[in-house]
Image (cartoon, rainbow, N blue to C red; front, side):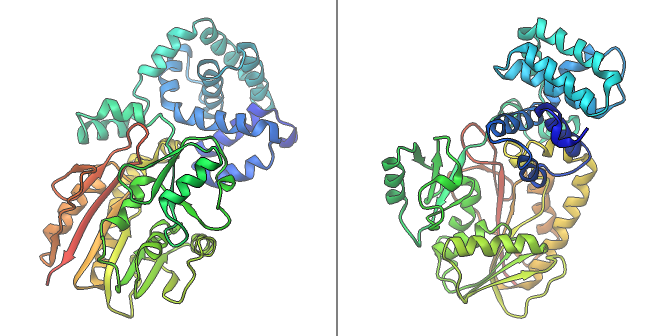
Length: 430
């Protein structure tokens, strides 16, 4: 059958299979949405993200229902999709079951359609019981749950619950174009509900369900979509960036770059990234925000080896990481990330750290950042760095946000607040 003739559940199942094969949802979703009718797009989006969000919760509940291993991860994914519909949506049970069974057949797994039908009917007959089992499961890959429990024993239950929540939509008001108060008033005029962020001085949290491009002033560059905790990077420095030469390492999509240009009068800003497409995204964001000027340079290069030709005063290093702090926004991370990835990531972070540190002038500052909540990438990485660099001194971040660590501060993703982020500010003293 032509994939364009698949029913909606088959299209969702196909996308889930691609994620299981290791492809990133963000790269797949836009292309797939082009094949979905306008009236079905919201449901498609809900079914994909919802099934991924509760993947391991549903897996824990469904395993006892299978008399033997199906040895077919794609059909198991379709079972999870069917159970998600039964437990978390208002779709009538008969429609959830019949449409999912049809999807099994359309995707070429007809011999297993009877098993899928039987499992979903069992769940349908006892929905409340299965809902409790699903909600009570920690809902994370076992390796990740064990690491988080070890790193955050007091917060582990809250973390498991929070990582299933929808992350808030947060924007950063472009201070070159308007003020936060003026933009908040503009939102109110348009009957869009919003409030000021707790920590970020230019952040607003949006509560109304509205496409980003339909927020007032999008084309005019009045705001940039950025998590509140990500906005804190530039605010840590206060006025230290004025007149300085700065590197924004691993810069895409340009959140820190654009924030610096909005907030400070820098001598020069070098935005570094190793992907040409991501460099293009920075350029597009600079253009929309009307921040194109002669004191910024975009460089497509590898941060582990790139060498600066000039003295650098400040480095913002948003290091590659497990991205465990942004699972709420990208639930596919739970499937994509493997335990073996962490060691490789930590080694990559160390290489970039050492290379960037060598570029920094004496007296300069490096801000180490990740969107991870794993201590091995954060506090432990810094502990190793300081033990190997006698020319490095931690500058305490004396803010009231986050949790103070041996080195740096950690923000955890909780409720309607920002994503999981880690910050450590280092000065080169010799």
